[in-house]
Length: 203
Image 1 (cartoon, rainbow, N blue to C red):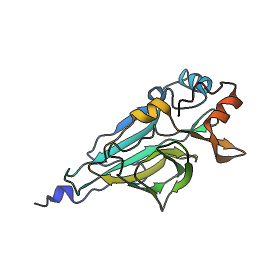
Image 2: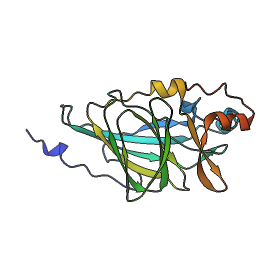
Image 3: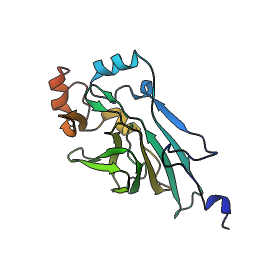
């Protein structure tokens, strides 16, 4: 049976919110261990605990062929040279792919294969679509000066695996170099910061 309430959702593309649907927020204090520059992270956190990103999800149904979707708003900012970002995740059901649609602002998606051997940085901005293949870790990054708002659409069965990222993080980091977002090896970046490779836990 088709329920009209599940067939139409109105949203604000500038705020990344769905009227009547609550937001799940992530503050800076909840991102301990995700940013490479731990000294810069500690210094930033000592000045306050801002919201880094917020999501509003919709789960109309949970059948085998159904889709879920979520709006997200990622704030601008940096920790050291590294841009504000989401925690990143795999899908619990690894074959599940996802589509991200940029609505406003400018950013990028960091994609990494599960073996940790290949990383890609793909632009995500207004009027763009990023396809995330299955078995791919993905993290959204705001590389601009305004909030990055985007829509993610994924299989209802996908689920979210944040644990793998919390345990080993991504192989690469995205930092500002000469005013441009640049993909760097995490080990090399940590070495340049004088923090060694100990904070890098990827196999």
